[in-house]
Image (tube, rainbow, N blue to C red; front, top):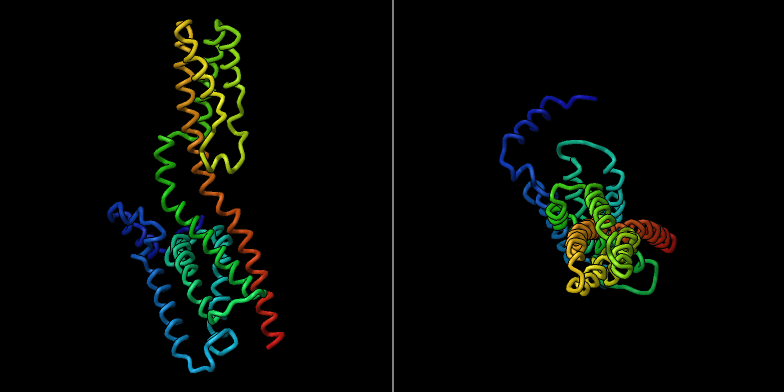
Length: 293
């Protein structure tokens, strides 16, 4: 493995000696909101340029300021779409993945201002508006993903309590073995409730169900309710019911874990296809502009 340059090692050592806050700085706060300041400055320059442009009857996509803003916007769109490729490279320093992601977020938001000024506030039913709408969809889905990545990791870590998903599954499996043994003396009706709970496939649910975190037909909950109704007439059910309650607790933890993971991944099902569609619409937009220009 290649070693880091001496100055990079020194910077790394210096960072290690600083407080915990610097080590845990999020990509949104990277270098004291460095890329937010750059994106804000870029937006201000574009706004001043748009309203200061001396064109008649008004600045729009077909004027020199429109072409300038369009070129900036198109360049940003292409560059922003390269984040997926950038994630596969590991580089420290100014263009670390954290810096690149921070730039991706704030320059992506700046695109709303730049592209809107490029349109000259003139929209219609054409490929140009399609590209604009797809850009907004990409930005909206990206903002959703940013919110999830900024808020969910702490909840995910707290819910896990230092357990991996595999360990959660193993914990439920261990309870299932105890339940299987404890349910042997039960009557057929109670045993069927336990068997239904043990037979339920906890992964046999779609994305929407995982995102909602609501399982109204949970066999474990139905078993708990059924056993509770029979407990007064058969005290031997008490141990099985307690084990089933423990199973429900472990199952709820696993389901929360799967929900958080689904939320961290689901926005990509919109963001990535919309980005590809945007690049295609942007290409059509540019070709049509120069073809009819």
